[in-house]
Image 1 (cartoon, rainbow over the protein chains, first blue to last red):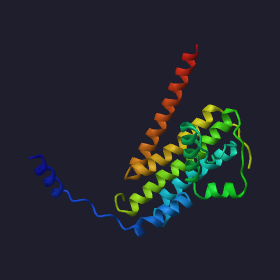
Image 2: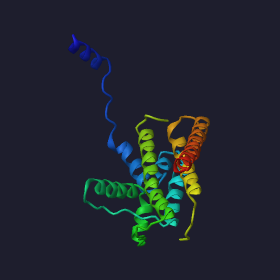
Image 3: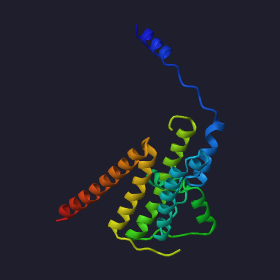
Image 4: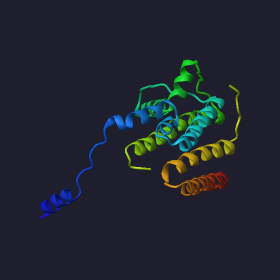
Length: 145
Length: 61
């Protein structure tokens, strides 16, 4: 009985076909490298400018507050989660992170609320860019206008 | 790169502003809905900032 119901439900709602990778990868990759770039590629310049502006300003304020860029570091569970997570968050800012590292931006982890906010802003910029990349993916695959 | 010294309130306000812009842009379908949702998110952030600040102030004694 239950098997029949499951089978009928599966029949009624076929799984959506996977979208070819070539359709969304360029927009997502460009969105990672240049914040908002994926939306420009998908001909959504207004949204791209707003998203890119928000990400870039968040990252720049993080730099101006002399935040620390995380480096991968393992140890106990909490240390591993914080440092690898922070590194991934920083890396998600794309060219902003790459340029900062290439131009030898290096700030030691210092006490004080301004530096602390700066570190959080740098990670937050990457996470905001991740949201923008997901939005670009949904537009490219037709899930969103 | 110039150095800025922001207070807790100014930094929180900036974070709220940028996050609200992104959340507004990516979640809704029309520009009007995006603007409204962005403002709503910003208002929620402000409420959280003031609410938690008072809570910490009163809790600290």
